[in-house]
Length: 173
View 1 (tube, helix red, strand yellow):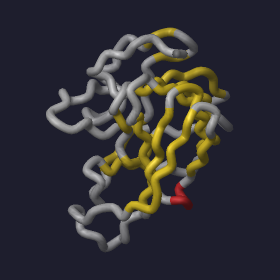
View 2 (cartoon, rainbow, N blue to C red):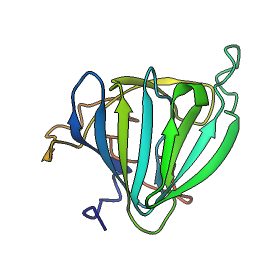
View 3 (cartoon, one colour):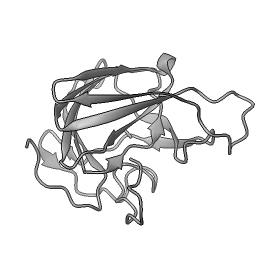
């Protein structure tokens, strides 16, 4: 396994490996078991994801119509399981997506974003209602970030996950 055990209070960690702050950013994400990102977009950027260990499931959704009510469910396009060594690609022309670790072990993925991005849209309930999100990191260049609580929205991937009740909870990017 490539990562240290994660607290169940954390969906996944976003770890900044390196960036030039202009053309690209490279992140290592460590995914807890039965956790997923929110449905989100990739504004003005493209992203390759390589699964290094475990497996993640990518679910694609169509963009909601501009006149859709906020409670309208997002239309699912596809599910793809990406195992160790597999690669996926995402940009806004493909729609929206979420990644999930549905396995029994921690998954580790490497994400190359080009160019880097700071803000994005999240669709927290898989409905047309979008919320703004902001990029955050659990570590930068190998050093832990001190104050995660002040980063992003309460639903940010850097905020602790709500305690699971019943079924596994969904997990962003």
